[in-house]
Length: 388
Image 1 (cartoon, helix red, strand yellow):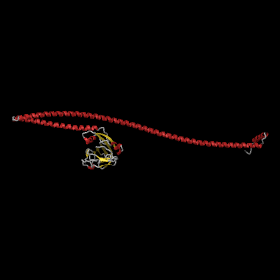
Image 2 (cartoon, helix red, strand yellow):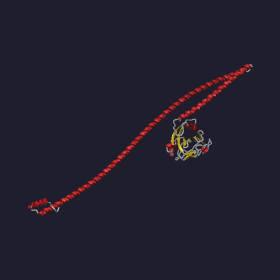
Image 3 (tube, rainbow, N blue to C red):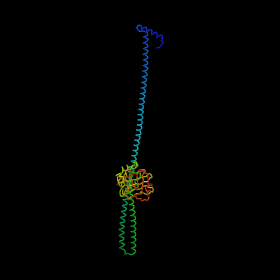
Image 4 (cartoon, rainbow, N blue to C red):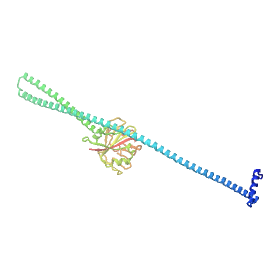
């Protein structure tokens, strides 16, 4: 309460005091009530302040919590948006990959279609060529038959003249001289026809050999080796048995199976006779023929039908087959690739050759026949099933 009251306050108090006296209340009591009221007002004000502070504290705490929740919510939204962006990117990548694969498949289909069309065209041309060769062969046969008929007639004429000459041995010298001239003419004519007949026979034999070779090669035109041209399969076929036409089916290609020996046996065991063709990183091509099954029996076996060969070598001599008279020339181990004793495939980089160990060296180049060095690195090797 202020120690100095204003005049209007004093007047007000006196008026109030007079009113209180009339009701039986003293001025002192009145002042006490006023003081109590003021204290109560202070308490109320203090409580208001404290309440306001509490409300502010609660409000601030709520704001902090709301801000935290908002931040967490925003973080969650950011994470979701990031995940959505990643998913969108992955979806775009997947779409691009699918489009690329689809495009590649279309290209592959077109390439395959072109390949089939080309092969079909080649086969038609080859068939036409074969037909024309057959027509030519028939023509030669007719020509031969005509020459043979003519030779038969000349032989008969020759015999007739000879008989006449023998009968007319007693004629005079002039007539005998005429007969001698005729005989000489006929003999020369026969010799001329004999030479022509030999030429025609040679032409037919050459044509037959060429026709047989081209016919065999035509059977292998669809083989898509990554190492050799399809025409080499004709040579390999003749090495196995020239009187038969074998079918070669790819069983295993090393580059498509990580040069894995287990996969070699998985794909090649118990498939009958096989031919293995090897290409080194130096460009040399060689291989071997196993006349029996691969079996993963971890042992050696073999017979004299097995052979090894060279197709491309440092000495530039023609494709050559090397035979053996020994048994146990084939090594059949489940953890290794094809083994031909003289050729050992342990892996892509740890293979070696030891020719001539069990196979006969008919070209006399020794250890440099197949490759210049004992050890070699494989670029590719293929194994084909051989069926009649």
